[in-house]
Length: 623
Image (cartoon, rainbow, N blue to C red):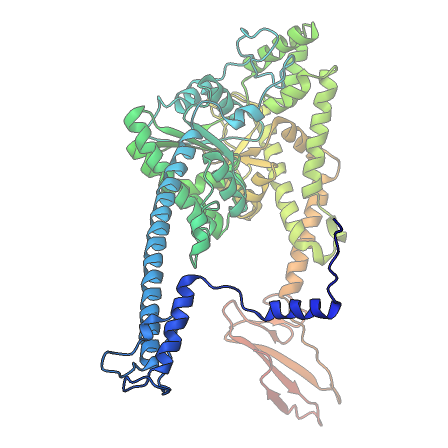
């Protein structure tokens, strides 16, 4: 069989493809029936005969069966249907939006309320954790492993060793820190380097810092706020998310308000602790004297004292203030009712020598003689910060001389006088320096008087006379002292003494006595005042200061245009007896200059000499 291939012309193939494209696709049965019904409806007229009549009505779309004409043959208005449809859709959309807003608002409100309550609970939990055993201050103040940093330390090679120095104040500090002594707040006052902070840290170690928080004060209130927040683990709402949704966040306030808020939270923790534990919390503020003695500093100190008084009365919190300066005590004394003052001074001679000898024996394998120990104590006294340096040095006496020279340079750098050659621009600084030199000279003279008659009690014969060197509770008989009011009388200034106390030149004790800041400083005073010509040089400086002040109070009157033998007559108003021009007070010669104290002014008259008639033409001058 022969198979023949049918050849289709290209033109016929193209027409077939085109007709296939024009042919609509097959429709499903339901769509086909709807189209047939649509065509039949168009052929049927309004009368129902349906013979070749076309309807003028809107055709019924097969996709919108709602648009069918009514049974009476009248069609519905399409615009009305559209309005009803839009209204129903708007109402449905509004209801949906409202329901969504209600659901979302309720969810956000419930979530925000739960977050707020959780945040407040978390703040209290974090603050409560700040008083659990272990304190960052103890870790930062960790003492060396082998050789202790201080002769008052108990950390040596043998952990069973007791303290080198048994201070009488340590038992009281231990009772304050462990909560057994309550009902008061405490002020520790003493010179720098006497061991106040060391005793507090030692007492904290014994209880592992449980229920205790300690931080350093600062002059800037913002830094003080941050340090308080770190000690209490309180963020002052800085991590509160709710502040993003409010016009004014809880942090937009002053440092004092933030400190007050922190104390409010602390009070809640203290109430819970008193109920569960029965002991108060302990807040230790170290170096409280660093606060400025201005309005902001006094406001902060008043806030702290008010809280301390309130918490001490209710046994909630015991606050301990540690200060080197006397002005803090003066400020707190005004409103104090439950304050106890503990004065921490230099070590007595027996304790200082015993501690120094034990330290040298253990770590240097050497036993110093009693003569050397006595000489060391006579040179540097019982100040712990000086004894530490001396104990760790190879040559103790040489180190003592270096300490004395260092204190001497410190004093001279602040308070050396310039004599008669000083410029008037430095008069304010020289007033500060000369007052310090006068007070140092008074202390040296008091020491000389006491050394000449050590057994006889001092009597107030002059303004330089001092009281007995140190009260018995101070136990440091080497430093003479003067009452605070007498010291101000000697200096003729009442405001400088606080600045001297702040820069560690002089110190004011809790019993209001002024003395040198330390034994090396007193020896420096002695060396300076014993220099040849010192008192003369000091008198010249004081005279120069008086001359400059006198020049500042003097007014110059220039007389000119005196012709033909004329002259000026200057007379005081309101005075009975004047001072001659260039003459002595009360002299009979010359014209009157001024009058007695209380005169109202000066009258200037010009006297002209014309033919010897002595006519006077006068007028009022400066008054």
